[in-house]
Image (cartoon, rainbow, N blue to C red; front, side):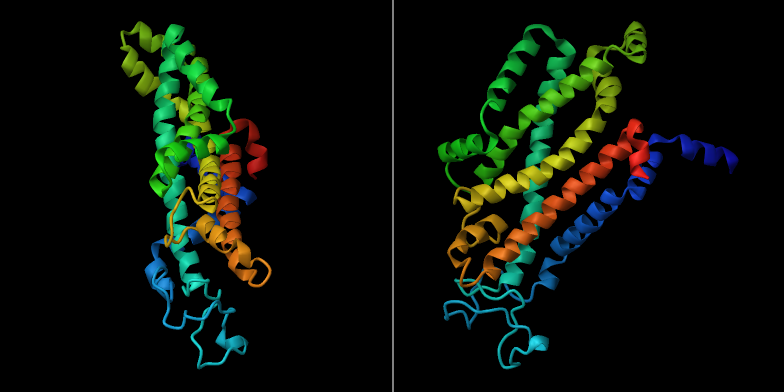
Length: 303
């Protein structure tokens, strides 16, 4: 029993989770993200109406929120967030939009981490001309404002959610390539790597079993924050009509469709904007907690 206690105390993973659990920002981020995940998983159960099919009573231009317990007549269908200009229940579209937001964030950042991590690993470990060529390409990509570059890519490829995801993934590649390269340049000179090399370990084995696993800490933190950025970029592209296309329940597209209703029906703009803010806030808070939990120099902040 005593030996197990000592082992748990010395386990970096367990200690990191304990610090994250004590971190106030991390706790709030995990709670918000957990609620979002549950809403996305149980969207067919929670959503009261179909998010795409117009309602039978949707022939009227627009409906104010109707909540029975707040005085709305029981004879009218209940629409907690109201009905959009196309006669679709807004609450159902908000709920289903959580699925798309998680998909956008996870898929784009996974793509960017895989491609950028591989390029950064090759550049940092091999050095020389390969390092110069890869990093100069990354510098060129980072020289452009990210959103403008994403708009240019989508304009060339054509509007659509898939092309928007690809564009966001491409503009995120340089961030992770530079991050992995910096970590590998530092780690490959450590004593345990030199010892493995002296024992005859191949370059691939050194890179994938000794160096890369110890370079993942900053990548995890940056990836969590990158998901929030990807969701914002996707919402911006959809708002401009370059991302998700109607009738897809995507929060940025919903903002773009209802932007002219900001004065006469502000709830149609407020609720998708609030949803975007909450999901971005949850990932930012979680990323802040992970940064403090995974960095031993910041342990005091995680308490």
